[in-house]
Length: 208
Image (cartoon, rainbow, N blue to C red; front, side, top):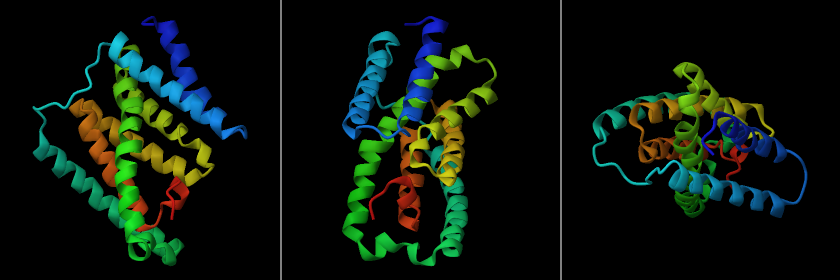
């Protein structure tokens, strides 16, 4: 399970074939089973093959993290707010204003049940398994962002692919610097929750 050939096949199946297969119309139950089995495999490999401990580090540079995250977040706020205001003003903060309880519930569920598993897959597992195979760091970060974007191809939306690619670059850079699933999950949750809040949730599968 640690050979280059095995990892190459593993990469293709998990990060290319499975996402592409989800664009095909077939049983939702089967897709869920594939997703659960895939995630179970990833957790098994992390814990039993890579001997990776899933724990909260205590020596994190929180001050630098928050400073950099909020700087990026401020830029995201400006561009996304302008985008929604220009393209469809009625969507701007629509769920927050009209359905605050739903808004709060989705933020909590999304942050716990969606963001953290995604970061285990696309950052913790991806970096642990494939970083040693690719010596060019910039190419590796781009590859990670492409894989993250491809994981959202089932939305069938070009803007979603662009946003997730850019987000993938940000998250990969954060994980590369901090090696922390916790920090990159917090960053991911902040940006994702904001997109839902500002009115871009529909295209990303958030209920509204």
